[in-house]
Length: 501
Ligand code: BG6
Image 1 (tube, rainbow, N blue to C red):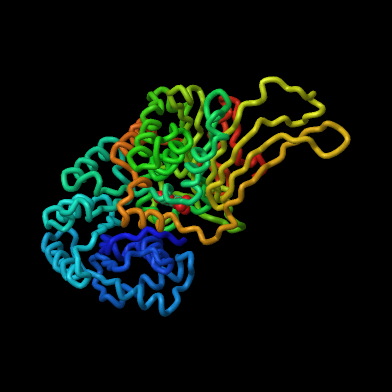
Image 2 (cartoon, rainbow, N blue to C red):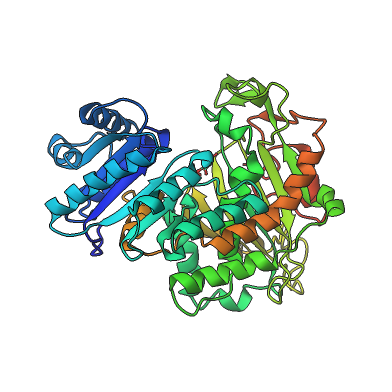
């Protein structure tokens, strides 16, 4: 990735510097931006944590992380030695105001070296319970006082229901200006996800048919093969609905369903997306059963290996009621989408890793062809494969070559996969945050509206334990009830055992 955009000199402060996110995602992203020439001319990265480490030990940890997780692999010695000279570690207790006074001295010292007041990017990669302490201390110490230069990046989970998300927004707004707050949803930084906007709004072809007159239904699947890995402690208090649907899947839904924005401007785009969230019909308690299903994986097989059930994973309650699979049917109450079901589905330990969006078009109004000519006159279908396959496929019906007029489905494919140098989501998002471009970040109202969609389902599930957990075997496409959910309106999952995937 090469971009002409360069941020002003920037100091990046990572709260949770010794954590997993810094090692797996943040440092590899900054490093790749650096080798691509996209980091600011002058920058410093400060990792904050309680662990006693010196700068060298901290750098070594990050170096190992780069080895394991960077898309560019093992760092070249010369690049690494230049890059790592900008990294330092700061032992601190984030509850302690004195630590912020010390940090202030350090930041002032760097400003002096840079010869100017640098931008400051404070990255909150900490458990939710620490956010208040960090926000209040940043404010009181005056470290993030310049609303034009100082930014706060905040990771999910952003609250755990509508009420807590509103409270968290209030806490942040009491301490910073909205334009300083960058709520990250890493799906929005994915190349293929950004391409949805280009695809929909830079082509005249789709808009005329992008509505209830031509579209029958939409499916969004984010299936993972992995289980909860080492995150059982966090995941057991979250679950698939909060971990994935409230943020990533609803954001994908917004991109498919939003009205054409007037410009590619942060506020405009976010306004159009929040319109979708507002228009999603809230499910009433008595409607949940027919419109939302949950699942939990049991033992099974993944890529030829026997894997444990969710309740046997480390740090998970052996009687856990947490869902590792969720599927919901949502309706959007507006002119464009009335009565078009949107099926959202996500799960861990599923048969394959697959994130895709399927736009199912309506059948032709009248069939010119006889049944024998057209065995399977399947209606047109547009599939946007987000990962790991990255392409867009249009299923058309075409004539089979030969003497007879016989029809069969054919696919037109736009392949994204050929470009292996695509930046990772975190690269795009961190660069945008350094540049002060909030287009791909969540605004407070988006987060709150998304919670309003999810909270009724969550409350219904929390109030009644699921009696059939675990209800799907690892390595399958989820519980039977998810098939029933989509079958109610005569649909089937495009990616499923039946569909041959
Ligand atoms: C995270 C979730 O937000 O997204 C994880 O907390 C999930 O549980 C991950 O595994 C999936 O992200 P990606 O980019 O691998 O699809």
